[in-house]
Image 1 (cartoon, rainbow, N blue to C red):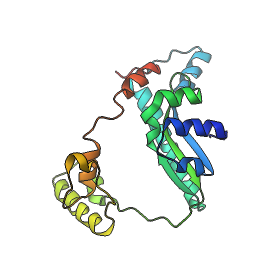
Image 2 (image 1 turned 30 degrees about the horizontal axis):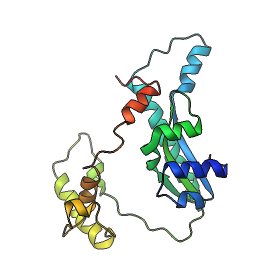
Image 3 (image 1 turned 30 degrees about the vertical axis):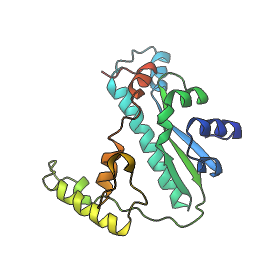
Length: 203
């Protein structure tokens, strides 16, 4: 939990463009922590025999579960939450600011407070695109996403088109076009090196 005002201000300097982070009553940073398990092994005189990719994956998954569970609990009592994945845009700087040791890294931030206005439920992909029974199947995926794009464009259109100066203005700008544009540009290319420097073996 970021309680110190100066610490929060420094975090905002690292991740600009998120001014609302400063106005939220509380701001939290959820971290993946594989350090504790390694410490337990050392303290008990046992060899830590799982220094491979799953150590990174398991710590990341635990942090994600903690974040989702926290959000559900907060929203159940009327609080509003906004996850901040941009915290990974400057992983090393965030790590330095929070004095995170080896095998610990920030996964996401979370702004928390009472909503200023009633939120709107965002339209999600239909269940048939994400739920598979017995076997994975995506035979109708393109058609399902196309239909979702059309519904969302009608009921919850994007206020602007991402990177229009590069890709131009699309006649039908849906979720899939927005995601394709978002991931057409490199981002967080040094994250793997950062994770390795944190002591994780990604093999």
